[in-house]
Image (cartoon, rainbow, N blue to C red; front, side, top):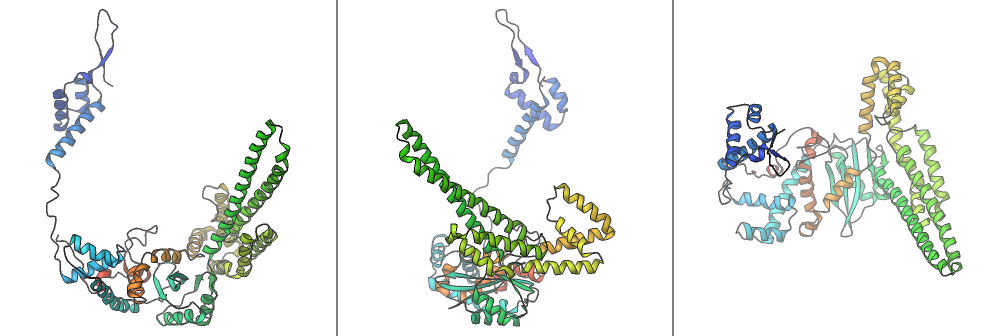
Length: 503
């Protein structure tokens, strides 16, 4: 710390004056220069000027910033950074980049050429450029090998009242089906799936919602491939039902509170009996609404956290709990028939499809038991411990006991179980994510029709991810993640040569 200087005055008390405040601008500058020149150490300079070392460092930083600004003046915005060789081929790939990277409309491209490039271009020319790229995109799409796909996700998206059939790899997000059709019946789905089978697509199973045409078409085209029930839509409906009942309970609470306020005001005027019956009914309605909301919330939580979760009890136990939840919801169906009824019917009809993942888990755990030559019960216990939080002492206690029991097999078995958990997919969230991205491009289909979807599928499969939650995807395209092989830039695949600045 700086040492204060005491200035004695005959008629006033002595007040501290910090030495740093007494330094003139020229002295501060000299101090900063001495630090930068390293003629003396910071500690010596601080003692010499009766200031703190922090103050000395601060002056040195100010001087350093001033030097940087003096020797690094701002660049002239009019300075030419680099030259771009504009050719007809470059303009064509620029049009494609505007359409797919920037989601630009055809008229927007015409306006951009006029205002920024001072070059006229017609909507017909833009149409022709995009249309010509469709041919090459189809060739690239047809060459892709789909045999590496193990889990497929299927769905239907509606745009302009016509269905678009969508299919993609649940792991790499590679889109192998994107077709606008007149209908979505079993024959339409079956024809597309048979065509995909000829390109090597034969997954272990698929994920889909409960559309009748979709499932019937797969059963006809791929009779040996199971179609698991998609948890995404079911869980979403369960949460929506619980949220509706919760909001209704909150509304009942608010109505009761409002009547109580009115009752308080009426009693002051000796008119409380006029609202007593309404208040009694409001309290009964509140009790029923709150009770129903709480009970349904518990049932929904059981379905999410205990029955449909990856790490959970055996299939038989899951099935019993599943039936119990459905039965309890059925008992409460009359209290909110429009909300609970449809959910109960879906759960009753989709039990086998929704629990198919649990049957698959049991089979894989049984195989691990045979591979490591350990008891099935020990594998099951180690599997269930993975569902406990890492901060839960019970997890570490159970793992310690299993470690003693399994010996050298413990860590390899734990790793294998973790891989099974990570690879068990129950929801077609990836296709829902794809659908949300598709809608941003569908406005261009009125110009190109169904052919445009082939080009769009090519672009989505061969553009590289700028960022991803999964490190193995970052900087790679879905096609590269699927095949494990790199490919040129998507513009290069269409026959263009992307611009590269000179080194």
